[in-house]
Length: 523
Image (cartoon, rainbow, N blue to C red; front, side, top):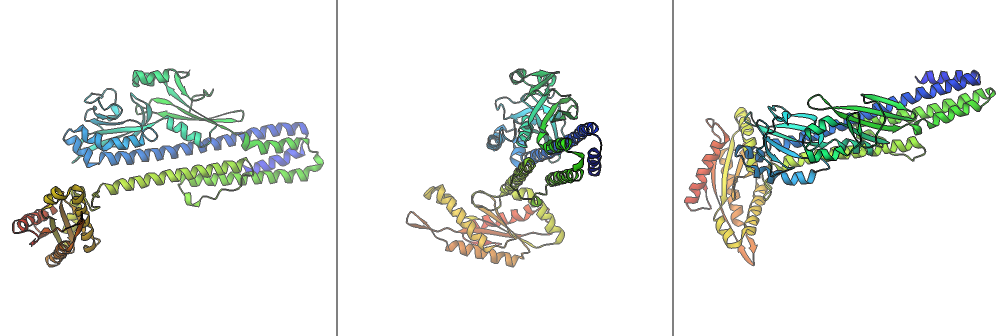
């Protein structure tokens, strides 16, 4: 195409002024269409990237909530308050910038917990929310519920391969309008199907949309744009309109996302060069030809830079993006704006990944002692046991707790009790190996799982811990507080069916140590 343009320019310079004028107008229209197509493709790529990122966020957050033991236990015990207490802080922090309503359903479309209205529950919504009925796998789709039209995820909540219900939440469609406005679009409008809004939104919610302009049965959020409502792009004057169809869960046209971009800046240099061409005498052919070729080469180099940047954004290759340059023209400004957008996208993706990693880590860590918690044992114990059995790894188990801990709490208060627990945990961590598992099993009860440890080695570790704790002395109100631990030891046996068999034997020996005088080890 570039060679054809150069050839067209060469011919225009040689022919008569009248035909030259016709050719200039024709060439300008061709370039406008190319720019329009490229701009429209760019917007489609941006939309697909944003949609993919939003879907990834919804799936990650839904997976975190649906697989939470707190949520599963709430379903098993029909306890709404557990879910409310667990999810409400997250909901408040994410609403409305990242998510809208969070809704938990029981099987059959029965409302369990709706954070848009916590007082409304046990309502059968199967006729309204068919997407949550018989849900067996995650689904992300556009949908209009009673509260808003948006991108929504339906995620099944399972326990032992049995579906307990479904989790539903999403983001408002207006988020996409805001994102494209940040990406520099001239105008962004949402055309939403009035019939769908009227049938699915609650009366009070629909009243807000009813005040919006109506165009061919579509309510308009944003500036009314006089374009054809069909997928693709439309070029009018120096503006290109990219039209994206939004299909909902029922394969109905929920609406259209229409993005207007003005091309005047992108084509201004070409238009200027072509106007100059008409006023230049044929005698200046060589000079004109040189100038036009130089302009086109410069323009295409700029476009190549922008295209390269867009490709790197599309493939998330952020580290290879160029640095911002001095803004010498409109294309430089556009390039620098694009680099700013890429920086924001990278930061957002990085933030989401950090949050996901943080939530995963916190799920298995005891907040007070910074040791592993019992949830880790419940969810990872089977995996560890299988590994030990397959590779025939000797495993030592130590169960221990603090002697007379209730008396410490009653005498000095729970703050002192917490300090004792923290001090104990810090002491034990200095003694055990990195691959040993240190678990807070109960209030003052702790568990050590020692891979590659024979009974003799296990007892040495236990005795060292017991002695080190016996030496500890905490200063409390100018008094010295000392405490001890009692310990029970066992090992993993070939006939054990789960790791809990070995833990149970260690627990029985712990109570034997308690009954025989405390501050001792029973094997």
